[in-house]
Amino acid sequence: MNKAELRKRYRAMRMALIPQERQQLSERMLRQFEMIKLPVPAIVMSYRPIAHPAEFDPAAVEQSLLRQFPQTRFCYPKVHNTDMDTFIFVEGKSRWDSSGWGIPEISEGAIVAPEHIDLIIVPLLIFDRKGFRVGYGKGYYDRFLQHCRSDILTLGFSYFDPAGEINDLHTSDMRLRYGITPERVYEF
Image 1 (cartoon, helix red, strand yellow):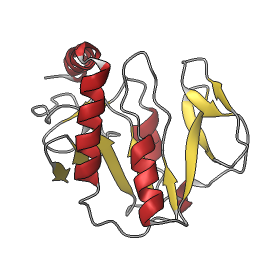
Image 2 (cartoon, helix red, strand yellow):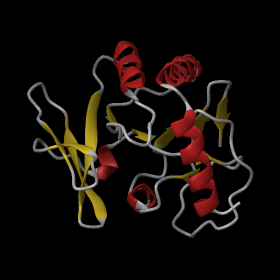
Image 3 (cartoon, rainbow, N blue to C red):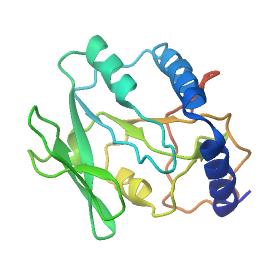
């Protein structure tokens, strides 16, 4: 299938899940995630979910990482025009605002250079059997990941098993390192 078809199909499937189902699936994904043996990440980039498309909320994953690695610091992206080019550390008094796209973003704080980020929790609708993801179609994460270290760990969480192969990949599409579903962890 192509990305547009997958995007339409999995957005509808995700929206059809009632909140209790999403919560149960999220808890199962957290248990799957906690079985991965990760190197100690100094800096993790995460995101705040968009409520309307029922996006996976990585807050429990972040808390799990902090329990395992208490010194880990978190940063979050900020989008300018058509690029995700600023990454801001969350600090105790960080203020969150909604971007023009309805995405929660930190308004200000210390900026992180992409080469210092060790692990990224990447939002997605679905990933395929080769580890390529389908997001919302703007390409922010794929463009950003090209500027990261080659050893960066990327994690994507999906309520659903991987889709078949995406047949319209672009040269800028980046593969996940781990795809996590309620049933298992896929390593790519």
